[in-house]
Amino acid sequence: MLMEETKERNGQEQIKTDDSIVYIRNDPVMQSAVDVLSLFGQKEKIVLRAKGNSIPNAVAVANIITEKMLKGNSKVEKIKLDTENEPGIGRMLSTIEIILNKI
Image (cartoon, rainbow, N blue to C red; front, side, top):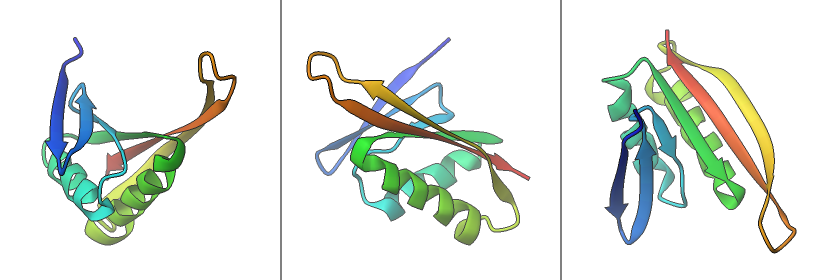
């Protein structure tokens, strides 16, 4: 069963689905990292997803978690890169999925 929870911060929306998937938007990177860190207290695996210009933020959050906050206690399990076609426009939109695990 998938649950959707919407959380608003500073006028920006961050959507969390299934409690272990975090959609990274253009929120401040450290705030997103703290949100992910709080989820790591409850879950063994967290999935970060981002699209387009938010991809560098997702990579930064993953690095902050694995290299600074939980160094030696977490790792990047898998990184998936993909491209979606935007309907009607014909442009392609890059996506990333970063799977983080506790060790």
